[in-house]
Image 1 (spheres, rainbow, N blue to C red):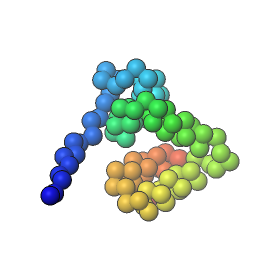
Image 2: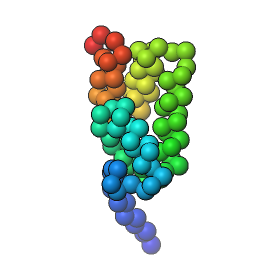
Image 3: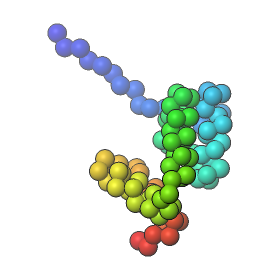
Image 4: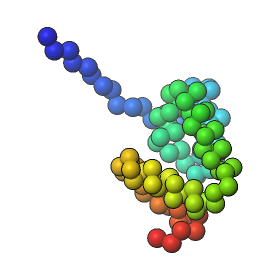
Length: 101
């Protein structure tokens, strides 16, 4: 007997469709990036997950690493995880942090 599971695609939520607990973090992401990245839109389905992700992001900004050094860390992780969504996004953020392409 074979059991098949149907996996539904992730929903990308926004400020209008997200649960109340996610809305402050959606507003924070939109203010930081000028738009809502898909990863935050997907995480918005679980307010605690989105809150944890956004808090970790904010706390990484409080380290002794410069903005450029933080982007190097992000890009190393993105490369190792073959994140084709993250690489272009962090390339823009890297350029904004002063890294020469």
